Image (tube, rainbow, N blue to C red):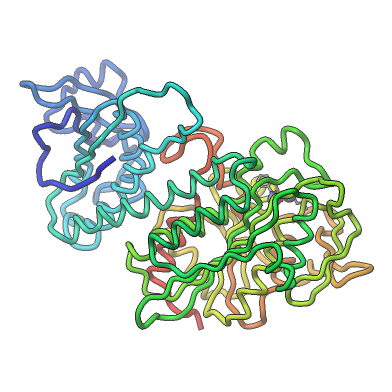
Length: 487
Ligand code: BES
Ligand code: ZN
Ligand code: ZN
């Protein structure tokens, strides 16, 4: 699908998209009686199609809900674009006139650029489907989307930036949606090598021998029950005169059966998504040159599945993590923190200015915050503010949880330095983060985003289709693009 920008609706457009709000459900030139008759009220995600006038294109009216006097914000536009493009996916050429909904104050400068970028992201996300395993799919699909708007070169650039961000998020979705039996660590690593070659990034792929030689005991312990050898990826994006160094870490469990502390059949059903953090990190790297990131960025991606082979790690086994800490594994299903322990240790060795990890770490974060909001925790308020601000601008929801010192003793082990599950059942997301904090060097600003509830969507709504969401890609790109050393 090709996306570009034009000042007016092109002659070959089959359908044009215009926005409506609850206050003004009838856009200029539209048949209000028809809209009322079909029950269109301008509610968020509502759509209605109107016939063309004088051989003109069809009109798709998309509801944006309640909108302030300044017009819709970028999140509203992104979502409306996604809904509209999904509703018009059978039409070859689609003209999107959503920027016309902006208030007068927003029709130039940064607000217009941010709006244009959001619309392009929404177009990409709304058009997304995971169809590689569907046979006989030959329904016609949109070939070209034209974002209609005034604005000059800056706006057109913003549209292209949005295209790149949207594509990066779709790459993450593809990786999450790929079955665990197909996307083995080796196959994920190949995908990363392709991205690195295309985008001129440095990449090191550590194989099983390299992982053993580096003492990545967490990765080796989780991999022990598998027939697929682990991989560990280190990516680097290096701009000229970098403004600081940022480290991204992503949990890459290509399938989580739970290991010997095995999950239920239902609990395993979506566990191909347990590499959603790794996918978000790779997705972000794929668009770093395109969005003009000015910081040096390192990526650390541990990859293994968590299986139950004859020599799988047993409850009670002790692992030695890269930084020398020993861990008693009392529940093999708390495996993410074991591979992240190695990854965070390695990341800290390079003394980055800040670290962020993304991980589908705990079911408990869904209990705390539900399916649309990720939990964020860390050791440095300035850095946490920077992360949550970037997430806000990128339109990805996250909310802080505390890291109370006095809960740390719940991770004391009788035989090793730490146990991998808390003695106490409650506060599962917090105790998981406290475990991770033991592998972050004092003084290194670190944020942990638990995306267990947000990496996967159970329904098609708004920006999302059932399956991988690509959550985190937009935040990571916005964070990297605007990175400031927190201390
Ligand atoms: N990958 C899971 C967490 C998860 C659960 C992600 C549901 C997405 C949806 C993780 O490895 C896990 O199993 N965590 C355990 C930790 C527990 C054993 C302390 C959990 O959340 O139950
Ligand atoms: Zn698990
Ligand atoms: Zn897991």
